[in-house]
Length: 178
Image (cartoon, rainbow, N blue to C red):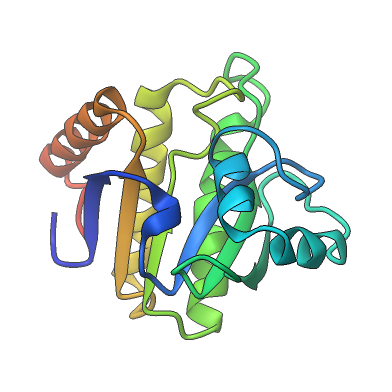
């Protein structure tokens, strides 16, 4: 996979990285899944900082401090709700990853960790989502020096298997380079 990307099974809220990515909703005020876990771990200051941001459209990002988290920053991005694949979902999901990496690079951050954006309650099929994530991140890293390390944090063993399978397939097709 190269030295710049890794896939792990774990809890994104415990990682000691420059930034973790929050799969947020448009309000940025917390919710379920990863979003709720990050808000609970960093609460209450994260909620207050997010209130001042005024929300975030799908595909875009906002950045806050990490507060009580080990991560120094939280990059909030709003993934698309899966509506069958014909409503621009793939492009919006790729934008989440690309824009998260771009803001990390602008801030000079060395390490970033992503959850599997939109694959929970938003219903994006994991097999499609992880291919988009790995391809988009690989393309970004091919032309940027920061962030140096990107970690994909899987919540379940089945998600981890899907990411590893997608990486193997992309590698065979030449799209898995870092």
